[in-house]
Amino acid sequence: MIREWAERWTAALRSECGARDAALLRRRTSELGLVYGDRPVCQVLRPLFVPRSTYEDLIRRGELLVSAIHGAMEAALRDDTLMAALGFDRVETEIISADRGFGAADLVGRLDALPAPEGAPVFIEYNGESPGGLGFGDMLGLVFEEMEAWENLDGSSRFHRVAVVPSVIDAFLDGYRLWCRRLHKEPVERPKVAIVDLADVPTRTEFEIFRNAFELRGATTRIVSEDQVAIVDDRVLCGDFEPDIIYRRLVTMDILSRTGGRHALIEAARRQLAFVGCGFEGYGLCAKGHFAVLSDPELRPTGLSDEVLDMLDTSIPWTRLVRDVFTSGPGGGLQEPLEHLVQREKNRLVLKASRGYGGRDVILGWRTSKKDWQAAWETALEGSWIVQERVHLPEARFPVWTSDGIEEVTLHYDLAPYMIAGQCRGLGVRLSGSEILNVAAGRGSAVPALLVAD
Image (cartoon, rainbow, N blue to C red; front, side, top):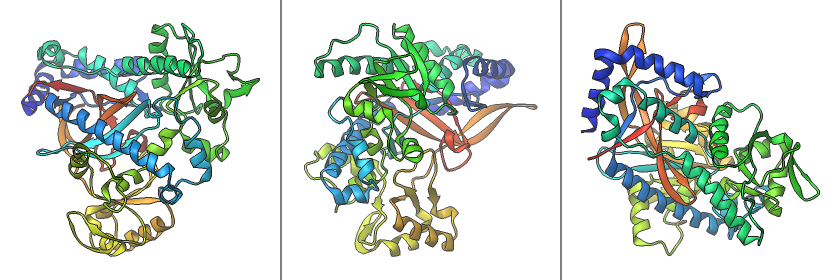
């Protein structure tokens, strides 16, 4: 049925409305600021159709996985050796602990998942530190609902889109009120919100989507450069603006690279001077090493439920911390030196920096020479890396508008369920002609996901 809907949408574009829908997408993308830097976030003319049962399974498994990652983080914070193995030094550990206990650190998070033609989906990463793209996805969904192809297929009665921006706004406002109760403070009826990041980030137009959404709920909102944030007389100030809520989009890696880990946002979170949504523990939750902890029988926490264990065994790939150890390979078997296994099986393995983001520091064994793979292994041994079993990316044909009319291109895609205040909700979709699916990596695009009955 999914293939049939995709074919019918493309047929509608070919038969009558392709040029008009392509012009609509270009115009609305420009009007709504749906760009990454100066690049449109979407250049294809069809959404991704997803069976409702697939979505519901992703949601169920995703919530179990994130709960297990939280458990792994708790265990690591009690074990200095494990924290070091995950790559966190003393300064980073202090940052991660800055605001623990005041609500969900991953108030907004995103799982990266690959659906399988048969069997369970596979999750390969978790970004628990204020990921981007949610606002773009919602707005793209509205644009696609304006297309003639949508009308021709009677989309309003056949397809369902899960909007996530309203849920994000609810999460911040509810989280703020809960934070006030825990501190025995009276919440402000119309709180002020600061959306904080670097001044020149390419996702800045997405902040405007959230600013508008907050203001529709009565919250005065400003987009603030991180260097405008200061602590003055126990108050958080952004120039002449004193926020009650901070939507932190500034990632911890940028704080570390620019200041070595000192920032007014960290102080504000530690001293509870404002509600810092997307708290700093989210940085710890992002570590890809958690997948190794949950995959490796030698490291996996005890006390996990049968349901969680089944999910881990079926929905995360074989993953190991890069160390000089003996271990078994994908599928089990006898233990052997990890280095021997990695060199022998390079065509089915990926090396990833445990704390890399934006598609950086990902080395695909099957795309790498033996010499370079060995060098990558030696580099990984000196840092904090994981080695993970390759998961094949699904592909689909998507229509694009060219000078010759509608043509179809084959693109890889993934599904990205969002975590919002501890619950999985909504679905991002990323497309790429390469094997690294990330808009920030310069090779990605996005489309809305539409749920259809099985």
